[in-house]
Image 1 (cartoon, rainbow, N blue to C red):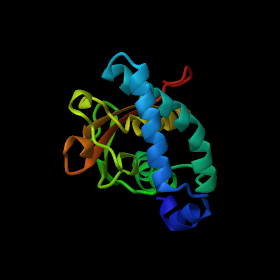
Image 2 (image 1 turned 30 degrees about the vertical axis):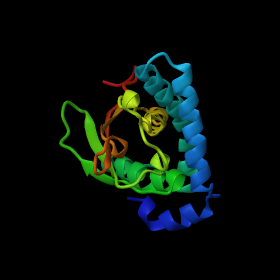
Image 3 (image 1 turned 120 degrees about the horizontal axis):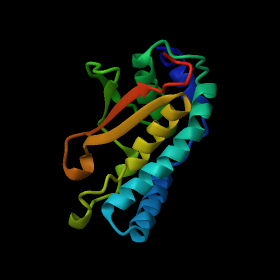
Length: 181
């Protein structure tokens, strides 16, 4: 994978934001979305939508600062998301578990042992259906859409719901164009 060689150099070149500031700001955004939403499902959709819009914009920054011209294959894409982009934007890495490909759908899981967005957060009982970090899922989906992958992302496990780690599953398929066979 291309990013491994320069990961520390790239991360060191990025201006850092205090993790507590990020956590508290994100918490305020989530709190406002919950207040503005009629249901937890609607709040999840809004977080994902915001993340999608962010992902469409930050992929350019990631690709330029990581000096990536092209990923070699789908596994390289997954590794760049889990190890490169997560480190660059959230200060954490995720272990990448590649699952068997079916019907041209490439699936991988991102295993997070820590998630800075979860710091200082406890979900009350009535919000157990909330995917608190759904903005991450949306950002991944948005970034992949920019490079012509159709993706779905869903949380399989979440530390906020008393799981030992957070697992985000990503399924992606190459976007078809009119001239494609």
